[in-house]
Length: 113
Length: 115
Image (tube, rainbow over all chains, first blue to last red; front, side):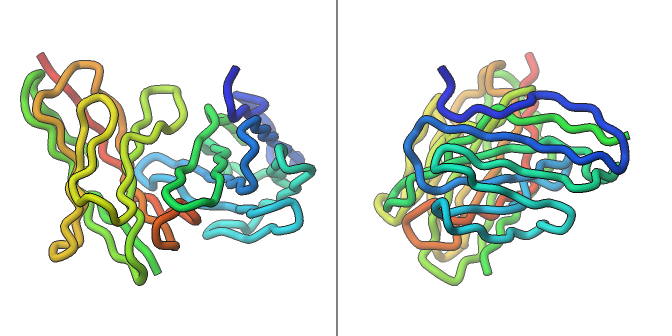
């Protein structure tokens, strides 16, 4: 079973709809991240959380919100989706220690019409 | 602030040829640098990371990268390309020394391998 899972894997929605993307991990990591990938732009950090009570904005948080329901779960919400939020969204986790790395989920492809 | 520049959004090599993907970084702390690979329709997989130990870092699938502080570079190489290496490659730098805290990614380089 995958260590970092994302649901749904694909979603098509309409402008103005509220959307939630979910991420779960079984790695026991404290740190979780949400990234957005657009062609030619690489990955941009939306929000990150270093533990359940710690939520921080990343580079491009406008239009997004997050919830850290438990150590293993980190959800990303689009309160009112707009077409330029069409992108590939990735969740990642890390352990926070020296020499660690970020582990990525398989991604959610979101299309906003 | 940290930043990464990947020169060349597309690189094409022949099978068996040397692969060289360029990454230059800027960091206000001793850098933690890494390379990720993304195969079509998949997530990102870590190829290798530099955390201030040996400057030549060996990764998976025959890739390696050399940290050169004087050139602020962390280029990715593989002596002989294979068709299965076709993918997108991302260089990233952390905001904390020695650990993958907040990563800043480059814009990616798509590697094409031809027969």
